[in-house]
Length: 612
Image 1 (cartoon, rainbow, N blue to C red):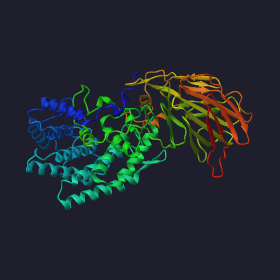
Image 2 (cartoon, rainbow, N blue to C red; image 1 turned 90 degrees about the horizontal axis):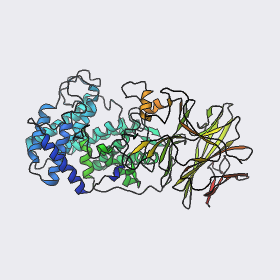
Image 3 (tube, helix red, strand yellow; image 1 turned 120 degrees about the horizontal axis):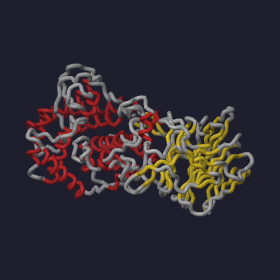
Image 4 (cartoon, rainbow, N blue to C red; image 1 turned 135 degrees about the horizontal axis):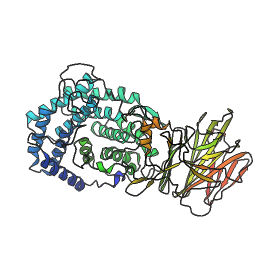
């Protein structure tokens, strides 16, 4: 079974001017065949996200005419714009809309669902989208719209802006991408207004960004990020926020958008595997976006020098939003307009700077969570998630039913490279059931093909083992498919792949057909699939898991666990030796010296690494 939303890396899509002209030509042909006598360009099956969609297609036709001067398009643009102005502008309050600060204001808004009172909660983002589609049409208006239509559209866009920022509470869904999109709309609209009015709108947009978005950022994995539906990062909406930050920077030149976009981009780069797989979020775990992410990934990939285009998007939305039959939908059309206008290409080489929350080389990568515990491991084309045992999630030694990966103090990290090898040493202070403080030293070494993990901890009672991840998905080239089998994993001690003994939604068996996201939503308190899947997943009691017994030959005062992921080239029989300078680990590929848990004079972990 393939994961439905994670398909090809987005930088695989052709992005030459000729390729985009081909896209716009196809859009124009479909739109001209679809346009109704009254000028509607909506998909006939559209029900949700419909209030801005005809106007979105209008903006694409305007851009297509601007680039190709197809003589059939001006009349279609004017007819479809007249349809929106006549049929899709709502000035009466939507019954049941909960976020109004001013009632019966008469300002225009766009409807998420056209029928009054049906799902009014979506009217705020629909109005943001309508504002953005409006300013895109205004940007392409020269030679298309007469002065009357241009003024009417500019007045409407200003009305949308005032409804969003005066009549309603700002960002009522606590959704970073929607809020930044509103700011972008204000910045773009300001250019089409008389100077005094435009300056006021621009200042208001910057103030909203500073006080309502930037001041509410959430820290995750060392970065301050725009919050998304109650969490710090969502793998669907995070890249969309990145695109909005890119457009804000492009149209305003304000450095604050570049700084915040850089931070979000570096966070995304660190959590994304080399193969482009990512998982997790407060709204969606696996539902990746498509073309909506291209502008942000491309713009900030160039800025930070990272191959962000490896992100696996939903290529069913490769160029524009589509309905289930594949037909054109104008929702998010502004993102296609902007990415076409962003002419520089992708940065395709990986970043060479060490990142605290990632180790990456070749086709091996480890993404670390806030505890510096692996959240996602990639090796030999297989993706491993953190496993669960006794309601505890992570990667680390398990003793007496307790997973030793929750820090009780500062987690210290040391990055090192030597020849073709890249390494990261993580020292975690943890507390066992007897409240004894122990130091877990975890060494991760990769040559780009294999990953060696060595975990050392003061000797534990009972029969400890290493919880070493859950095989979940595999790279199938064009698609990501589900798997429950590890690829080429070996261990110095006995290695087991276990599955939950108990059935039920709080026990995840990777052999089943239920995806991680579906399992998370099943544990959610919200039956409408608006619950936080990251939060729900934490209710998991147990999962499929790799378990490794202690390695033989470890020093008497230590338990050492040693696991190798990746292509099983040659035997794996690591040797260990304690000495005054720390623990020496010898494998077929390297010799490493892991220093004392106390670190150097400044507390920095000590590590030496020599290739064999």
